[in-house]
Image (cartoon, rainbow, N blue to C red):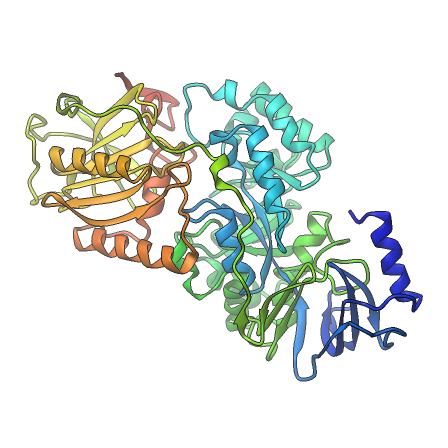
Length: 572
């Protein structure tokens, strides 16, 4: 981790031969092992803590000295389950989160894996590693949808290259877990390889029975983040799982879960973690892991337990507590300075020895990654009005933001415009390379959306929704002009849009701008009849076969519980 010449310099500080770069005096800090507040001095050389205790260094010339009197210092927060591609990109989200004290991500690799291939993905990750921020990664084993070339993409050699990386800490999440339980050889081999490489396996088991949880534990799964009730938390802990409690834009369960744990007097906080689980930008307007810690404090969790759930517990579970989660010798110099222990939003943030925030003022934004490594979204095809044919009798009905069920279509599908008197709309999923399309209807999305296009989706393919076929075509063309994005068309003009120029799925804007854009789009959709909580997740999960009951996929309209295509995709 540290080169020998760096270690010799660090020892030189202890020996009084070299001055530290930074000395924090009169520090009252949370010691994660003792689980109590300790007072002392912290010496830092480069990105590493070289000493904690009562002494001052023999040499101080040139060192920055910070008096931390009246502050409480806690380890940098760790987001244990990040999907860093929810319109934002990993760099801009890290920049935003870091200034709020979340200085480490354990991140989903799915977007990189599907769109880039390993060589380019690893180049981007290596650039991210140059930031004063800590990135760790998952290795996905399945696409959470049905791809035309699933086995070709998710092959063991490609997955194995991820698992060999030291910054990959887990395999999963296992959205395709029924395949594993049924003995699928590819998924079984991937899990076995991950265990050989010493990685944790993360499940995805919403509503799973005790028997299912027991079976999956025997198959090698270590943790799960899908508990929706206190009883489900207990069941997972009983079976020996690590449990991550979720507080997200579509599942804000954390307050109720923590209240239940406290009401039942379960002494289990050492075994719990927290996550925002890939929430969309506007959910983070009031924080990232600092937001989760505040929820815990408001629920009555003791402050030390609340902070450790977002730092040491994660580091210990994933085996990186030699670098993270403890303010002690040898760890990264990653510290959050609090004005009081009941306010987790830090006044000062030090990450890997660099100030991200100083006296409540943010430092320069991150700008390290060359996003041109991601191929442009630049479809070389147009749509013909004749392709807007909708004749099948089965459509998709929304139950909530992300759950859908089949329904019988009785509309006159030959019409170019649908009435505003009902909530049925045309729906198309189109290959980003123009090779195929899936045409159907969607019920319950909205009753007054004329035309909408999105290049943001589970697979990067194109989604069109609307009442008016010509407006849908206009939305598609405007999305193409932007080289990717979300576009809402009304009366021939753009009513709202979010440009997504990085590969058609990621914004290049900083989080504050993106939050405004996303909020404006969601307001516009709500004004036109979208009635659920998070429209962005509707577009993301429209293809996702880890959810019931019917999905639009690359192979066609797909009945999830029966594992069958009910309307095949049409070749173009």
